[in-house]
Image (cartoon, rainbow, N blue to C red; front, side):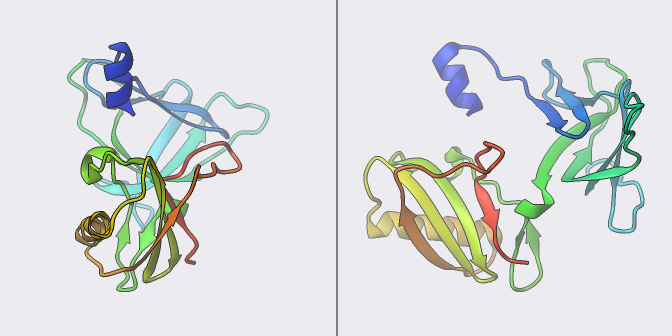
Length: 200
């Protein structure tokens, strides 16, 4: 999406990281791409499975404490996201840095051999011009539904190429099913999710 915007309008996209319950959490640095935590209004912790602070580059749960919400303060509120802290940003701003936002816990893929992935597969990864939109749905621990919106149907070889890419990416031989749609529905919150998991 960033590449498309850059090509179409010649402008860079600057991202914000927010949650409905707490507002803005971090703003992307226009110079270096890191996310600067908005520490004036909230405290952000990234914690491991034992509720210990993660080191720089380690993935953990995002836990937020609001500092300005006097009506209904949220203290050490786990918002359901995973992220990584980063080194101080070279721009010179003194705010804590989030270097990577992994995604929501509900969107994690779990393979039958108990490994966890945050599925990410930008268009540069699969590089098939026929595909306008794609969504993976984990129906069962070993079965993935590939939903596609396309300009024309993929042939058998192209479907096999996609399967091979996903097997390589997730290091598991899933059973695949393909579904072609006119449009992929958005979530109740209006967001497009490129991965949906129905496995508990």
